[in-house]
Structures are given as structure tokens and as C-alpha cells.
Length: 219
Ligand SMILES: *Cc1c(COP(=O)(O)O)cnc(C)c1O
Image 1 (cartoon, rainbow, N blue to C red):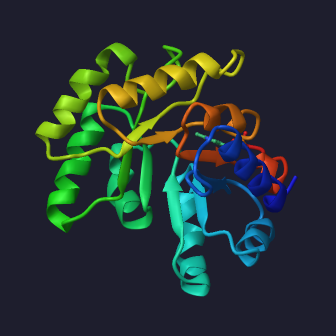
Image 2: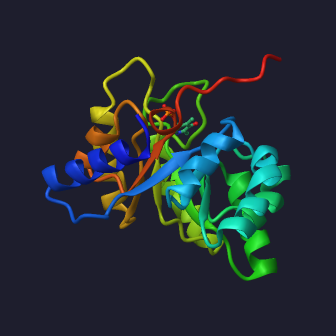
């Protein structure tokens, strides 16, 4: 599809939902994409990207920041506690705060360095056993624990089950965010970002629709 078409669809979805133009941040998910595809999108002027792997991001974004000037890189993949220090130095936002041990680690890093990336709490809205994220029933307690540690998450994030209609998941995430006074909503991917925008997404994470299909290195 390409960046321009996706941006046009985002603007149309904002308008259809009665939302201000520019109220949705398009995160271009560049994980495992060849450098020339990412550079093409940088050259078109886009400045907000998403990555899933700390090591991969560390290998490319410092150079691109130096070359292209101010940009935002969002961590949207699972974050191991032992990579948290690298992550807070590298990313502008972390969408995958999903457990108490990571909250503790981020809180202590924040104390040491005086600031932290913007944080989203990942919620496992589908209650899938293999998927990361705080269970909906545990969210109030988790947010209380975060507050106790001095963390103030900006919003919530979800990845709906692959085989289901995402609509109820987006709706429930939006309701939970409103219940807790959180303004950020990270939801919606290539196949469903317009639905997510209709339900109040503030950040959509779109990869293959911008860059083309990902080819993972064979293990
Ligand atoms: C890879 C990924 C995306 C982008 O997926 P597409 O279907 O390529 O748009 C979005 N969110 C998360 C958490 C991802 O891991």
C-alpha cells in the first residue's frame, strides 16, 4: 500500500469518527524490514516508528537519528527485564509494560536517570495463555502498584486474538482506559486500524501495509 495511502486512510477514519485530524499517531512498524524500505519512509518525511526487538533497534536507530534528526521510536515487542536499561535509553515509548518485575525495573531506572519513555500497559484482552499482558481483572491492582512505584503510564495497549473480530477487544480496552483516566490507546494494526480509530485509538501500529510483507530470517 505505502505510506501515503495509509496516511490518507488514517485521516479518513479520523474524520469518519468525528475526531480531529492528526489525533491518531501512525507508528510505522519497521521490525525486520530491509533498511532501504525504512529509509524510503524516512525520506518521505515520516518520523514515528515501532520495533519489536531491542537488539535489532539498537543496531539501526542511533544512526538514523543522527542522520534524520528528531524522530520517535516505540518499543512494541515483549521486553525482557535484563534489556530494560538498553530499552529506556533507546526508545521514546514502551508499549509492553506487562508485569510487576518489569514495572519495578523501570521504576528504578527512572529514579536513576530522572526520566522514562512514555509507558503503555499491555492488556491481554483475549485472556490468551500464550500471550503477554496483564489480565483485565488484574489491571486495577497493577495500575495501583505502578502508581506506588512512581510510574504514571500514559495508556493501555492490546493485541486482539488473531482469529477473532477485534471490535470487542478495542471497545473493552477503551472502556478500561477511560475508567482509569488514561488517555493513550495503542491498538490497531494493518488489518484493523480503521476499526481501532473508530473506537478511540490514539496510536496505531501498522507494519506490512506500509512496508510490505516481512520476511523473517530462517532460523
Ligand atoms: C508486528 C506488529 C505490528 C504490525 O503488524 P502488521 O500486521 O504488519 O501491521 C503491530 N503490533 C505489534 C505488537 C506487532 O508485533
